[in-house]
Every structure is written in structure tokens, then in C-alpha cells.
Image (cartoon, rainbow, N blue to C red):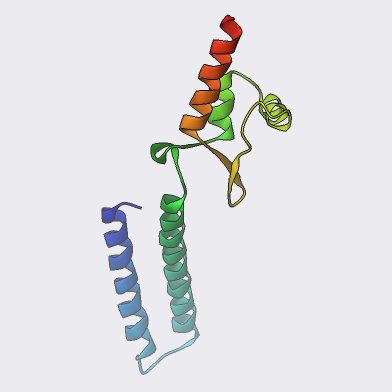
Length: 123
């Protein structure tokens, strides 16, 4: 989430918090008010989860940071996913790093393997 998105989320949370406080202090508080507070609290939770999710995504290695996923490895080699994993099993490609459930590779290392494959095919 970019800076503007974080500021918007922060503003929305403040407004919701103020609305919840005002409703909770009403003298004629009833079930409808309780339901409205619950809905606003759930909305706050959704906003917070979204901000946390976006923060987590930014921490994960990405193409900009020199790591690539299996889809891009497949594209670079012009091979299927199964073929890539077969090459790994045969020792022709490095084993991937784990990033949670994702498999990622160092882009430079994959590029070296591509260049090596081109060089050895020419002989």
C-alpha cells in the first residue's frame, strides 16, 4: 500500500473509531446501535488486515530485488513447470529458495545457468 493508501486507511480508522465512541456514549443506546458498532469494528479489522497484508507483500523478495518465481523461470528457459523441476532434480538447475510457500530463485544465478546452457550447446 502506498503512502496515500496508508494515510487514507489511517483516516478511515480514525473516523470509524470516533463514530464508535460517539455511538457507545449515547444515552438511548439500543440493539441497532450495537449492530452498527459491530459492523464498524469489522470494517476496521478489514482495513487493518489489508494494511498488514500489503506490508507483508512488500517484505517478500520480488523481481526488483533480484528474485524470480517459477513462472518467470519457465519463461526464461522456455520450458514447462514440470520440466523446470525435472532439471532441478537432475542437478542442472539450482534448488529454489523458500519464501513461505513460494519457490524463488536468484535472478543472476538463473541467468548464469542460461548463459552456460547457451555456451555448452554451441560446442
